Length: 260
Image 1 (cartoon, rainbow, N blue to C red):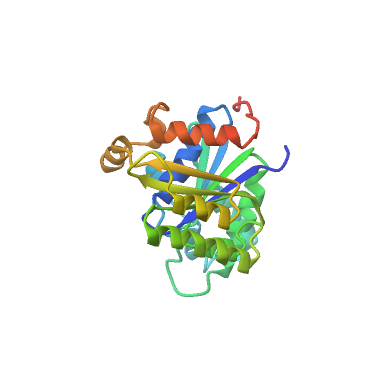
Image 2 (image 1 turned 90 degrees about the vertical axis):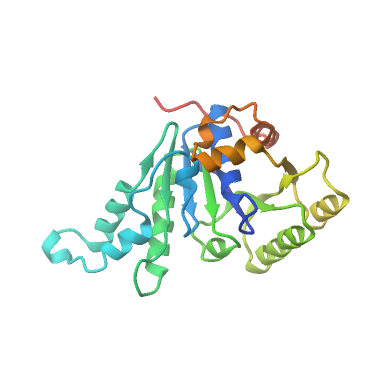
């Protein structure tokens, strides 16, 4: 299989970043572009809840449990054993799988877990045509090079002046870090109206965005979140999902048949 199309979602906390990531997964599946690998790279893991599955063990937790493994008693090299355990931590959903980074649950450098996570993503990616990565707020995961390149970098913000300034700062930070991406999309979430403001249009031009997507505040999604319902259970006629589906169509990437 060719290299997967990778979508990395980032943004300020509280701007609906995880909701957008989950909606992208749902719309890719609905458009026949499965299987999708959903990657929860936010230490405050909650992508599994939004997608209606449950992560039992994160990479961070596995790393802690494997800290004192003695390969002499197991007969398996420590790194190989950890990689096997991480693969076992993959959660299988309907037309998608999910793996979560989590956070370190003990003292010590996170570099080892980072390297493992990066290696596992590379290994897993060969089995999926599409990957959606929900990053932590900011660009920390990108700067740690947990993956080499995103085909599409999505920066989420809200329509407030401060929210748009944060999008601009994240764009500038990405350039300073030398983050590699093919295309850039700015998503302005929780709009109260239907039109994008002049400030948003100016921002899109300044950051050289290939696409700008305005998403309305949606009571159905808000209620679903409160009730703990999966994004996959939301009708695709929902205004937010419909716009995201159209956005995916505009990317010009082709659908892939479901797994047998």
